[in-house]
Image 1 (tube, one colour):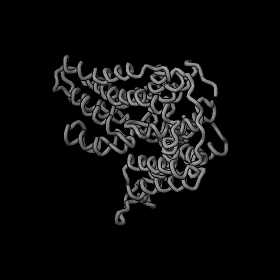
Image 2 (cartoon, helix red, strand yellow):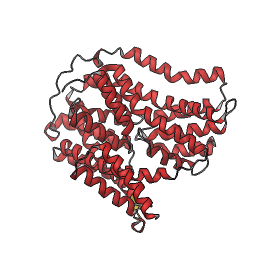
Image 3 (cartoon, helix red, strand yellow):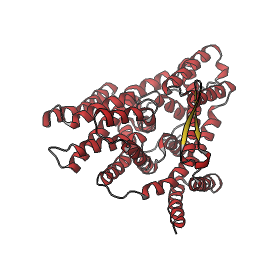
Image 4 (cartoon, one colour):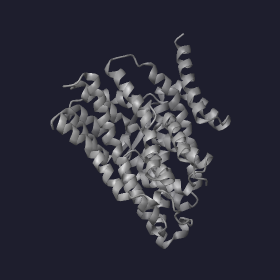
Length: 434
């Protein structure tokens, strides 16, 4: 594996940040394709172990994985560059969309365009599931763990951290007693890289201070009871409990924003989520939409637009600064401990569980792309997502078929597929309205 220059890293993650649509599954698939399959900057085992590690942390796992890759290749500056570029394009687009939404402009063409993009992402998720599963599930034990994780999430709505941590405990026990069940590979000694020379304590202290900075500035300039202080406090709390991605905390965020703080009206959270799904970067960027509207509607002493932009900035800052903090504080220890057999077993089992998680996300994504309505049927302890077969989205089905053909048959690049599917969605809708 050749180590890229810092400039090469910046160029790649700048491009990834612009095209990383589709939520964590699609974004992880994109990074896997670019970093492991095509450029071979990161090994398969390293990538999967890092993904497992990021799944254990609060916050958006795809952005944290990008930060880890940058840290691994170029230390702290690499982590800041990769993680920042992964977030920045989506943050800017989300800010623009929030402004348009607040000003009541017509955004009806966005769902049409991005229906095609979602169809392309569905194909990409399936490709990632096949590729990662084919490499990770090399024993019956791992296959069983993957299936068990999928069923726990899909049928029992098991808490995501419980599923992942449970798989890790099982893997550690298996590594001690039945290591052949996991086919553990030897991990090469850690190299003398920029990452290993990073002064961890100083970086952690600096990031903790950066996290606290908005609170200090708001208290000094606007007082402790300003809406921006409420925004900073609420989304800081959210940054600590966002295990399992944006969807895991969406209901809690909607309840607090609508009922407790009255920042949003009922139904507006769904609008924000729809906008967030049309932007590159982490889906948790929906928090920026909430922060923008909260400050936009209580702007004093600023104008509504200025207040909204400040609200979006504060929200994004306290949402993502902790992500860098977790990675820079904990990643060096993971690098040192990954040579322990039990830890290798835990991470190997986690890899198998992640395949089940990706399968669960792929199923959820497919149902919500291909059907207009998806309900839940309860059978005792089971809770099963059931689509209304009479509400099949024929346009989404046709666009998904196009995306699968472009990816698996024509083998086109991701950017090309995203563009063609988005254009096809617009043309199809125009043709249906003629």
